[in-house]
Figure 1 (cartoon, helix red, strand yellow):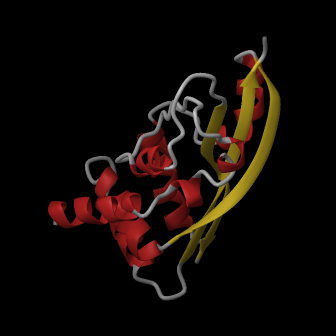
Figure 2 (figure 1 turned 120 degrees about the vertical axis):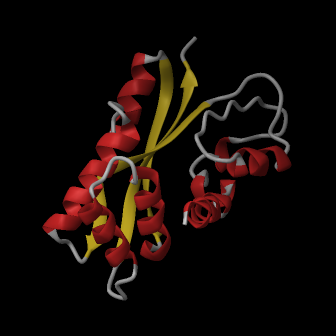
Amino acid sequence: MEEKVQQQISNVLARRSASAQANFLLPHLKVGIAVLDCGCGPGTITCDLARKRVLAPGGILALRSPDWGGILIAPRTPALLAAIGTFLSVHYNNGDAFAGSNGPGLANMGGFSDIVFSASVEREHPAELGPFAAGKLTASLCAAEIACLLTWANDPKALFAQTWGEVVARRAD
């Protein structure tokens, strides 16, 4: 079971690309600039950016972070919302699950200017997301919450979409 969940996690992350998850950034990239990608996945977006030959000094800041305050989920049940709440508390481990909407403020505090904010909504497939979340949290969730996530994942009416905050900014001189 553990190997199957790990494969599902890998499948979800492997489909990510610069064209899909960093589309807000691509118009700002030129050949010869430096890019520092601080991500948390297997590097598929980084590899996609490297293929676009975006390398060398003088880059810009680009942030993309989810904001769990803007999720669309169905069917919306108290048990599913509780399971998602547990996922957030464990997965973010005192981090900010709503950071997507804080990007412009963080860039400003970091001394960046020319701050451009955008947002996108990304649909995830419950059949993959449910086992992904359950697999991440198996040690942290009770059996009822795991069962809820897996039942939701197999519900033909299930849907999930998440809002992502996106920021492109330049360092103030």
